Picture (cartoon, rainbow, N blue to C red):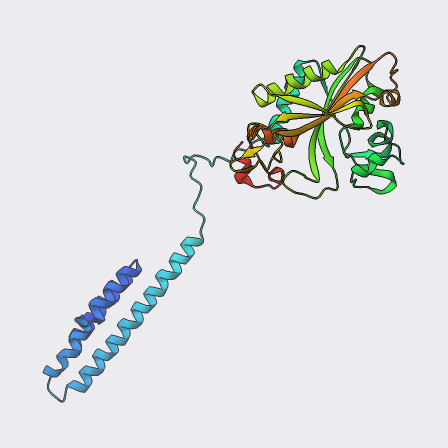
Length: 345
């Protein structure tokens, strides 16, 4: 029995030491210590020995059993430790593998439409100008025929800053800056951000984008304004559009108009399904931009003689134009930062 125990011990040490995976260790455990295992077979064979030899032989086999169990457990822990260490090691780079392609960015829908508009107006001879987001009270209000006691200021919920500065409520201040800087005649557009202390809903935002337009020359009339607006909208909306002018009051134009475009969501019917169209508020028209002939006081503030020159101006809401073009019904999506929305463009 002693020879059998020693032979099995040597064999078990060798096989356990050569095991490379947990599965191999488990297979050895079953073969050596299972119900039909080799060590278990020695224990069962003790009954065939003479009675006086059984205690010593039983002690030998039990020591072998404990020895094999300890060897299996030690080998199992060694394999686990090696696997953990391997998982923490970074494999060396393979220069033959293709590199990771970075996600491609894309332009915001407002930027897309703004750039198209700039191309359209540039083709009509317009300059593209810029102005400061933080503006002086003089350029934002007073030079635009809105003095401090004018009731029109109540319609501008303004973000005021110290020392009389403010976040501009429209892009119109650049009208004055353009007339001060450039010789006549002037044809210019001014895209940019504007800020108002608005209650945010599906059609209003506190930060929004406008495109101001200004033309000053001899003999400018409302007919020039209508032709310019139809040419612009036809190009950007990619279809013939029906527009209407309604009288509107704006201190910096006289006469002033509200330009509306036929609602594309309900086809101008004012209804969507069985209910009224929520976008145009069942009117069949979407208010797109204010416009009009430049007020003589604004021309004077820009150093232009209103007896010799006339002009027209407009302020186009870029968000609303984008909504009409792409069928977007909630203005809050533009500033929400939701990639699911932005990746559609």
